[in-house]
Image 1 (cartoon, rainbow, N blue to C red):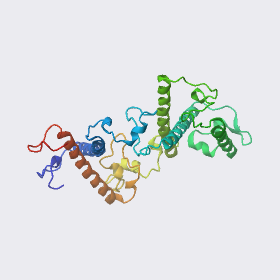
Image 2: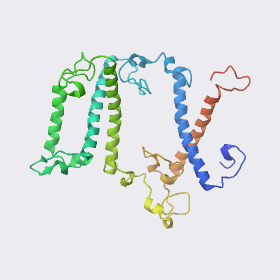
Image 3: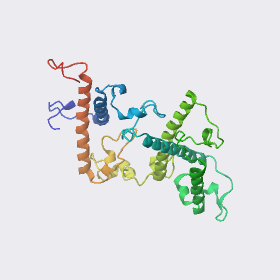
Length: 334
């Protein structure tokens, strides 16, 4: 602002002369503002639920989620984590159905992650299709295999999955979710079971945690594979990204306008603006800046800065009140 100096103090002091230092501090302001926006919302929620921004979960005695806080999967650091409130009605049947689905998807995702990793080092010998003379070694890893495997091969895989789902591993309502009568340790169909006790609870919790991680991991692998051509592909391979600047031109000083716009030939490039910091770089997963050009970007950046600054002041308000108050305001709650 024209009449706002350093730290917003209305003293009219001019802009910082050190260009590198100015850029570093503006990036820091954006980063701190982004963190503060997340933090203040967290404080509001925790304050509203527990009576204090630093309130313990045990103070939220009215939580409808307490009906399930002794179930498997309630683990540190989140405890019972249901941000969308799917279990807030306390419906035990619905919870059981979702837990069964969670376990199934987690197990499939763990196998899928192995399916992405192992073919990088080992593939079956022989042919996937003798009629097409298609060897297993000719089938690429990841999503590219979708175009190579014959339709008959996919039909066999779907049939195999159906037999497993409907024939071998059928959920018994009298048993725990994911516990099948003829499924032993690690799912091997030998009927063996872990004895009840702390060790069994620990391993079942580990299965849920690993399944949750695998569900996130396989989606990340598939997205990275689809965008770069490999589950381990570099961002450099995603040449069609709408968020990518004309990087080759941008590195050529003869093609870049001497301005803050950042793009080749003086065109506006959101990825070259303040705020594109490590580790994410220019991060716009919803593509808000892909349309509207410079005017739209500046409107969004102005709103981001304003909300970030307000949030940083709000954080100070939350932090300062427990330690110090203006005289006459001692009785005002935090």
